[in-house]
Amino acid sequence: MAANQFERHGRARAKLKQIFAIPERVSVIHYSCESFYDLPDGRSPRITSIAVRKLDNAQTESFSIHQIAEIRGVSLKSADIEPSYNEYEKLMLNEFFEFMRNNTERTFVHWNMRDKNYGFRAIEHRYKVLGGNPIVLPDDRKLDLSRLLIDLYGVAYIGHPRLETLLEKNSIEALDFMTGAQEAEAFNQGKYVDLHRSTLRKVDVFCNLAQRAFDKTLKVNTSWKETHGLSLRTLLYLAKKHWIYTTLIVLGGAGGALGGIYKGYTALMAALGYS
DNA sequence: AGGGTGCCTAGGTCTCCGCT
DNA sequence: AGCGGAGACCTAGGCACCCT
Image 1 (tube, helix red, strand yellow):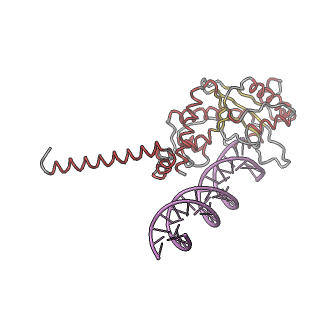
Image 2: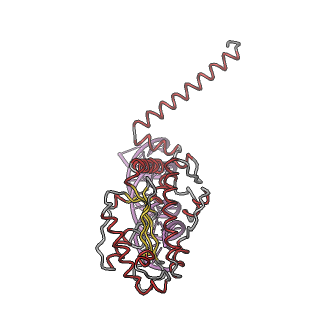
Image 3: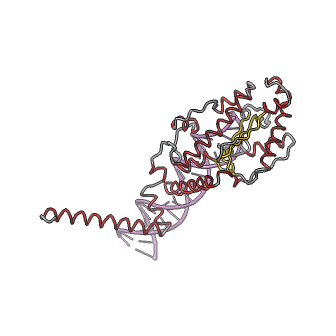
């Protein structure tokens, strides 16, 4: 409903202001994993790399399989990593959850990391499977940028797939960026370094999009009116809901009427030769 | 492709208003 | 007062989206 868009836009704008008021306490997070479709045995998807970028100074922490292997002096060929994948993955998640324990005050901006299939819960679950004890991030410390942009600009703000189309619309050249399907394929081919680069690029892109949304320079398909949910229907809805809007609408109407009368009066005076 | 999420729409219910 | 029609509102189900 249009009125809902009006309210959603307001809430989203407030949320955006809130995070940019304390950028030193906000990070953007993203991760890559193997495809969650090609797991016939129901096993949880393996995680390849996680990137966390601070909103204020762009400093980025990253955790990845190939870095763990490198530190242990293992070659970065997938054939050499694969036999010990679970062990390296657990070491990587140890580091990640240690980082999370040391940064409990931060809010994490993410892109669709919502459920046990893909998201914080999926990472926590995977760590448990590997014998770890994850720290659980409270939901009020998570901000889904994908949903925020929908609330901010309306559901039709960009075509699908949203992320790729949004980059194109805003002429953002994302070097090393891979689509989800490409990342799944890269995992199968053991291209862990490429996956890591793509993850790093994505947190960069998400920061960029959040900044443009905050600066009101993000290009979208919806008009200003659609973005703000403004229509006659919205005005009527608001008039019903809040007395202040009723007053404004009445005053606006009265102002319009007075303007019309004045215009008519001056036209009449001009016609009669008075100026 | 799996599954959670949210949007959209159709259909049912409720409320209001006008007519008899 | 009672009835009927129109519009508003609510809800459930279907469907599209979205992540890798």
